[in-house]
Structures are given as structure tokens and as C-alpha cells.
Length: 342
Image (cartoon, rainbow, N blue to C red):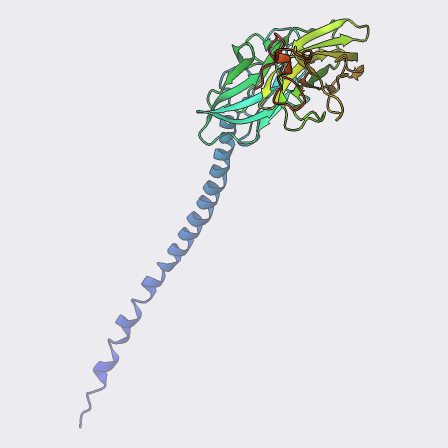
């Protein structure tokens, strides 16, 4: 018998089955390395440095020189607005070394329609509004004491005169610094390393207790500054400062001793007691006081309506018998008008 079955099964089966697997296995390696390199290096560098550089370019826009006057118009204080009121010793409109700040000046922040805030300059002449109104502002108004005016327009002053007793500094762009340079009637005879100031108010002592409580400032009252020899160094009248206060100001003064003479208007006399009025009730003169360099000395005076002469018995009822709104004091019957109140 002849056996033929097993011979054809042994020849062709292994060859086609082993050839295909190696070819697809070689393509996996190129896909691992190309993805590692582009993912690491290109993404790290662009995200690190491009973000830092735009942050530095913001600084030139924070500190602009909008009016090209060589001064920095940004105070570096967030949304605050600040500035300095200073005395221009040589009246050239540019602030130089040794020219002092002026204390006690009333400053108003003017919004788009109304006054947004108010401040008073400190001993160095500086003022600050902590926040600019959200709707913006038009500028800053300065109330000038009697005897002071704006200096020449220059690199050190933004203020321009509006009336005899007010000045205004406009706010172009995003200005955060507005200064005002002033000149005055009084000028020190010799230069000093540091100057002093004398300021104060004259108030109406309506409740006659000698204490300045809920009183009103009186404007137009004459105040004279005397040196120790009795000579008149300067003279001024009280002016409007705010709703409750009037203001007089003397300076810049050379260090030394001075005294003040308050001249009450017709129909008024000085208050007594309480301790808030520095003027002698009979003479209106203060005791001598020292003014040092860099110091601000405050001296106030309280006034009240003076008693009028009572007409003789059997009189016809002259105005001297009329009583005023202040208990115990007759109506002012003198020809001079009492000083205006704000």
C-alpha cells in the first residue's frame, strides 16, 4: 500500500506568517523622540520671557510727563492725587532748593460737577487726596490767604489765578501731581536755612464761653505781625478758609520773636476765659512768641458783640436798647458792618 497524505502539509505554511510582524514594530521609535523635543523646549521659553517684558513696558505709561515740563506727573501712590503748595522766593515760577512749602492752605478736589474732597496743606506744604473720583476730576482749587498770589507760570507750578483769592490747577490726562507756587507781600530781608510761619483764625464766640466749639470764622478782621522792637513786619486780613474757619497767614518768616495785634471790627470785643483765644481781652495783643525755622505757630482770637451804651432813663427807645440774638448783648449799632461769615 502507498501513503501520500503528510507530504504537502510541511512546505508552505511558516513562510507567510513570520514576515509581516517586524515591519510595523520599527515605526514606533520615530514617534517617541519627535514628540519629546518640541513639547519641552519651545513651550518653556515663550511662556516665561514674553510675560515678563510686557509687565516692564507698563511703567512708562504709569509715570507720564503729560505737559512736557520735566516733572514726574505720577506720585506712585495708586489712585491718590497729591501735590505741594510752595513759596517762590525769587518769583521765577520754578521751585529751587530752599524754597519752603506753605502750611494751612485750603485745597479742594473738583469733580466733573461738584467738589469731591477737601484737604489742608501740612507743615511742608503737601496735600493728598487718597482716591481720585471714579468719574474723573477737572482739577484742584487753592484758596489763597490775604496777601498771597500765584507765581509766574513755570515748571514748578500748575496753578493759575481765577480770582483774587482763588487759583486753579487743571488736570490734563491722568495727572496725579498738581503743585501751586505762590508769592506774597512779605519777603524776608535775608535768606534763611529754614523759615517759620504764623497762622490762625478769628472766630465768633456765640455762646460766650471762650471755647472754639461750633463757632464760625470771621472774615475781614485785620491782623498785624510785629517784631520784638514793635515794628510792623506784615499785615493781613482774615479770609475764607472753610465753612467754619477763617484764616490769616504770615510767612516765610526769619526765625525770631514776634507778637500779633488783632483789631476787632466796630461793635465787637474780645472774648474772655476758655483759653482758646490768644488775644488780650482789652488790647487784642498776644504775648510775644518764638518762631523757629521749619515751625508753624498758631494764634487765634475769639470775638463777640460788644455791649452798647444804654440810653438815659426817659429816652425814646434808641437802637442802643435793642437786644441782639446773643443773650445779654445789645444789637450792634455802630456804622461799621460786622465781618461777613461764610
